Length: 229
Image 1 (tube, helix red, strand yellow):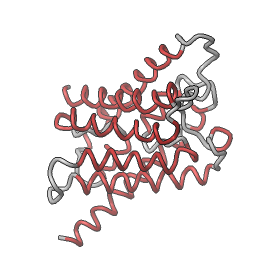
Image 2 (cartoon, helix red, strand yellow):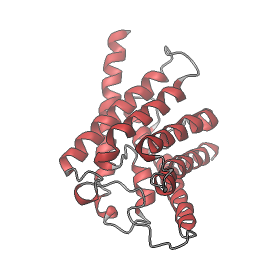
Image 3 (cartoon, helix red, strand yellow):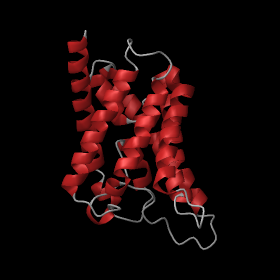
């Protein structure tokens, strides 16, 4: 149970830190942290969470990562369901805590988008479904390549969380205007429960695209790694 609890806590930290920065601090009057600040927040949650909990569970904090690592031969199939359930619970609990916090603001007028992911009218830049699917697949694929490469036994030991955290920061810097950045189905699901938009109806895209991207990334990394042996 320790590894499942670690995945729950790690995913809680990712959603609370990343989505919390978007909900509470991104557009704060005069001192808002903006897209760059939110991107850093997501990267820092993964970096710190991986160092704190990675030695217990592997530090996935993301169903697409777990599935990608399974597809890449780095993770057992029997662990997929409990990991994914733990991740979704952690993300939802984090969103619940954020929901409780935002209600305490004077003049609270509702949650609005609540840092959810979306396409079309729910995309920050009004990007299409095709744009959404393409960018989520591509970015999740490269995220898996970074994860598998930095944790390869041939890679320098101890630096993987830094590479992974910086990769997630870069991913957000690229794609916040397109989808508000998912590459993580649990992150998308947790906040969707509390949004006042049609985010739940679009949630399927943020499960399908990251999972497809993760499997592609794992395949590509293994292909390259084998050729390098």
